[in-house]
Amino acid sequence: MRDQQIMQQVKEILAQISKIAPGHAVELRIPPYSAIQCVEGPKHTRGTPPNVVELSAHSLFDLVNGKLDWDAGIDNGAIHASGERSNLKELFSELQNRITQ
Image 1 (cartoon, rainbow, N blue to C red):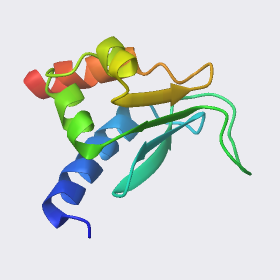
Image 2 (cartoon, rainbow, N blue to C red):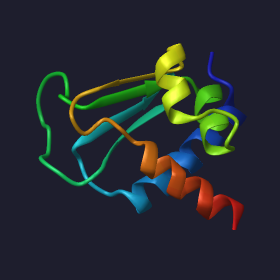
Image 3 (cartoon, rainbow, N blue to C red):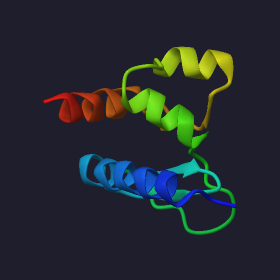
Image 4 (cartoon, one colour):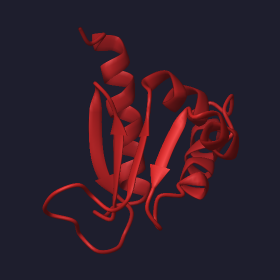
């Protein structure tokens, strides 16, 4: 069962990401809460997207709050990223800057 409070926080973060990096080149998944397409580039319409980033809600919160570094999250398996456009390190850095201002 999905926690409604966590779902709301996830959706708020994903809405901010959509504003920072609109597009359809990367699918960002936070199962079981939500997923979005973001980042400019070729639009994917069928089958498994070529650029996918998946992480838990708690890893998302840690990433946004600066408690988890992108590279460390990749290394320890907290973040799963595949595809040539799946490195969202700069996107999350920009999101952190907006939140802390």
